[in-house]
Amino acid sequence: MAQSARIVAISHLGDFKLRLTFSDHRVRDLDFDLTLQGGIFEELRDPELFNRVTIDEFTGTLCWPNGVDLDPDVLHGDFEPSHGPGPHVLADSVVLNKSQE
Image (tube, rainbow, N blue to C red; front, side, top):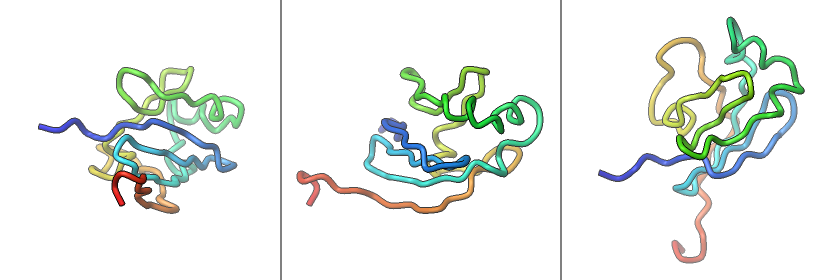
């Protein structure tokens, strides 16, 4: 069984928007505005904290210093969130490298 795609790069697009690049070359621009509601997620509405997002090396997903991490399969678009709204997809594409053309 092949391993699921994991996040390999993050770019900030302003506000609560991020561009995620996955190990399978999928690139998704996501808006997390509606996702950041309630409980520990509400803390991420602070732009300074939101912008401190990193990639967890073990799980290959987004994580923040306050302990929030998100399911990489949901971010990749393979599954719906188990509860609450997921991020809004602004763009979704696959970038081919030279060996895939």
